[in-house]
Length: 199
Image 1 (cartoon, one colour):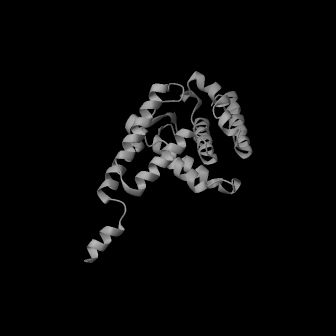
Image 2 (cartoon, helix red, strand yellow):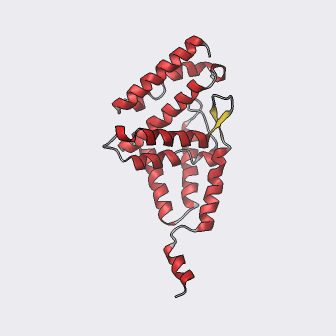
Image 3 (cartoon, rainbow, N blue to C red):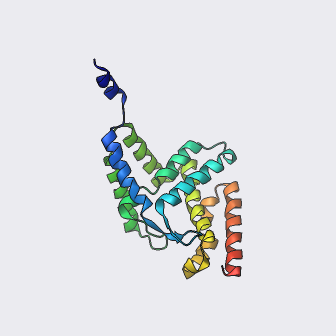
């Protein structure tokens, strides 16, 4: 058997398939979120996912009983469907929108094969079911990253309803983790100060 044939048997990821998937995922760099950065730029979905993943990495030592590698994986892929659907703010999202997102996830899973297809499906299933500690922690990070980003943006980028959301968004998700509750409390306090200062 030639070396090339041996190599083909070892490779589990089809290279053209990988590049096509990355091309779809690249859309996340261009899909705007309903958030602005501290420099006044519109935030994109990829930036949100990246910083959530960084947050998970930073708090790894606080959660010894949780598989943080799994949390990192969930953070990386959680908004991949928005490469197809675009982003819909939480206060506008309907059940129909959520069903469309599930269909987008299915489309992404079907665009790949082999071990990565199984892994991606497993991650989407875990996110959608929200039963594991890992899924619950990822969801808490998802909410908190958005709140932190709002605190970093100019107050004039907020919609009136977001003043209330900054007080309540993510409260329920963070209840499961004492450390995350403390972080949520601090983020809320930062929001209160920001609103008082009007900046």
